[in-house]
Length: 325
Image 1 (cartoon, rainbow, N blue to C red):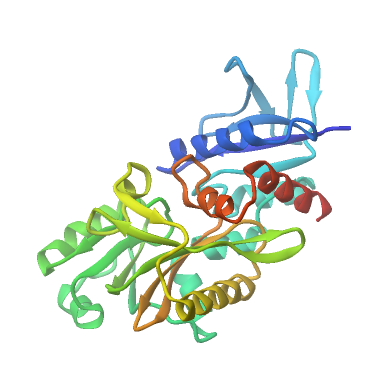
Image 2 (image 1 turned 180 degrees about the vertical axis):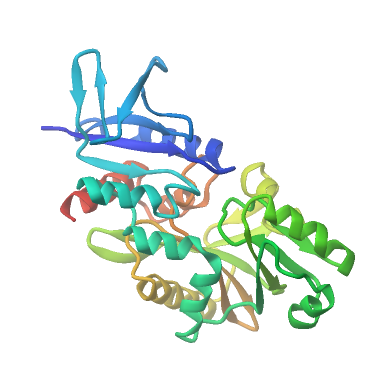
């Protein structure tokens, strides 16, 4: 008997449109011989199942079911395609845990931890993982631009602590650019991170749980046409994403080893994609994405394709792993 799968998409953040695109890719590629796929739109104003005709049916939050005409749809598993809150930060996953509904992401705590850039850096640095020098600010904290420059130097990156898809990120080249960049970051989050600029080759590494084992995917090199890997570079074609990355064997082995170690340190499961910059052949960890983009322009699909895994197999594996758990 085919399983009913709810593909949740949307969310409450600036990433809502990207999430909907990712969710639709999952919907199109899910194995119809194994699963009945349903798109479920999660927005602040409504939770609805959306059918092929774009007709909406309310989700009953008591048990996360939906009724189409007189048929009640009970889901066997949730495929999480929500970038940002409440999917990537674990909030909605806690709700699924409470009602006993399996999902494809890591446990709620791991998702909350990895969504918080500062806390993730604090954990991995204790295990000897190299990171950039950073400063953490809460909205309302006194800002001393001279002290910021003294600690992290120029240029520096100013980013929301809890956000994705490069929303709210700026690269400040001078002291006068720091305050506007901080205000921009505060538009996305009340917590921000200011990091030193690391000059070197940037790569992104997908690590997933595949067929019961931790699998490191082919590495992608990021070459942005813009000043850094911002929203335009990620989604509007302003970058080259080269898979496999043009790095030497020693660099490849080292970043693969570290990426797997970070996945284990953070007690991850499901999908992840982490960013690293090589400084003197040492990969420096930047951040981890636990609901990486699955759109046609996204990196993880490129990596699994390079590894010979179809999106259908990738998504089936995620669901079967979740059902076993």
